[in-house]
Structure formats: structure tokens, C-alpha cells
Amino acid sequence: MQDGERDWIDRFIRHLDVERRLSPLTLSNYRRDLTALADWCADLGVERFADLDSGHLRQWASSGHRRGLSARSIQRRLSATRTYFAYLKREGHIAASPVGDVSAPKAPRRLPGNLDADRMSRLLDIAGEGPIVDRDRAILELLYSSGLRLAELVELNLGEVDLADATVHVTGKGNKDRIVPVGRKALEALAAWQRSRALLAAADEQALFVSNRGTRLSRRAVQARVKHWAKVQGIDARVYPHLFRHSFATHLLESSHDLRGVQELLGHANISTTQIYTHLDFQHLAQIYDQTHPRAKMKSRK
Image (cartoon, rainbow, N blue to C red; front, top):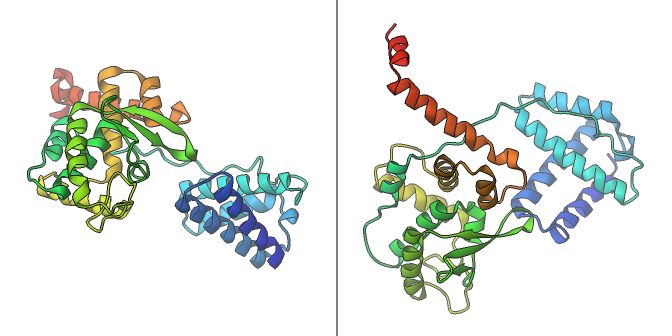
């Protein structure tokens, strides 16, 4: 693969960064997948991206499968490649995209985990005082109350939570904004944290949640604090920030049955992403059936 061809990967990543404003993690994933394609082309003796055809791309996907890549990883690779070749075509570097009719193997659909309402209530019932406890209580309550992604939570700034209106202004994936309601318990926790925040925050820091050094709290720090409180509260499950979002969606759908409303609150672009929670709801009903229906009990004793 010619060096000039690899330069196009750098241009594409800059395009995603500056024009589409994708996250650093997403940019890193794009670069890794496209560099893997360029390395594979070099091993195959393909000099230019314009020389690739759909047969090459199928061969690349198959080689990944043989090396043990999961169906989801191959899907991600082809998605990145499809976006990249659309960019090259738009820039006039290639005449046509070779990825159009190339499909990846179907990945098994994994149901997200969630905590039931009783365990979630126990997890959120944090005891103690002080700015760190106030901050952590506000973080946990807000994650569950509003179903925020971890990235959305750590990027919140002062003024994006409106206590009077009981809403939070969130910037989600693809730089899309949405307004999400905040529940009563979360509002109380946020009000307490805003009173304590001045004890930790640097004078010019705009982040809503800050570390004990006074700067914006990192994703890793939030993950560590969630894990800490799950252990303290005796939760017998692996607890991580996204579990609050899954639990939020599952509990809301179980009580409201409003799939479209849950989609809006979660900020899903496609309702098919939200529909996975209907499978969780059915899973819950199936468990109740197995535990309570006389015929199910009779069958289990055979």
C-alpha cells in the first residue's frame, strides 16, 4: 500500500474530528480498523484503495473471521470501511465504493443486563456526608433517573441541569441534543452536590462533576466510584455506569409500555435499538410465568 494512500486515512480522521465532531474513542476505532485494512492490502500487494473490489472486501471479512474476530467486530470494520469509501468517492479519489453489497455475518443479539427495582433502590441508598459522597450520590441518582450514557454524564457543564424545570440538557452521540426529565430524588441529590461543589471545584472549572483535584471527573473515575458503591451496598452483580441506563429503560418500559417515548429519552436514532428492551420485558414475564404458573411448576418437577 502506497504511503500516499495511508495519508487519506489521516485526512478522513481529521474530517470526522473537525466536521462531524466524533468522540476520541470513535476516531481511534476508525483509525484502527482502516489501518488494519491498509496493512491487509499491503500484504496482498494492493497498492491503491481504488484497486479494491467487493471480492477483496469479502476476502478481508473472511480473513478476520478465520482469525477469530467476532461477528460484531467484522460488522464494525465493514461499517467503518463503508463510511471511509463514501468519503473517498465524494473527494474524487475513487470512482465507486466496493463495499456496497458486502455483508458481515450476523451477530447474536445480546440482551443488556439490568438491576431490578429493589436492588437499584438499595444501591442508591448511600449513607454518609461530605462533598465526595454528595457528588457520588448525585451521579448515581442522575444516571438512573435520566438514563444518561457515561460520556454524556461526564461532559455535563454547569447550567445544563435546570433544577427549577427538573430537566437536564444532554449532548449525545453525533452531537445531538436532547432534554431529559430529572426525577425528584436526583434533583435533591444534585441540589446537595451543587452546594458542596465549591469545596472541590477550581475557580474556572465549568464541569458539573469534578474530582478532588477540582477538574472535570473522568470516565474511569466514575466507573471506579460506581464499582465502589456497589461493593459497599452489597449488590451481588457486576455494576457499571451503563447498567443504570439499561435499568432505567427496562423499568420505564415495564411501567409505561411506551416504546417511542423511551426511544426519545434514551436518544436512540433508530427505534430498533430501543426494541431490545421489549425482549428484556418478555424475559421478565417469562421468569414470572416459570415461577408462578401451575403448569410451568408441574413441568419443572418432571
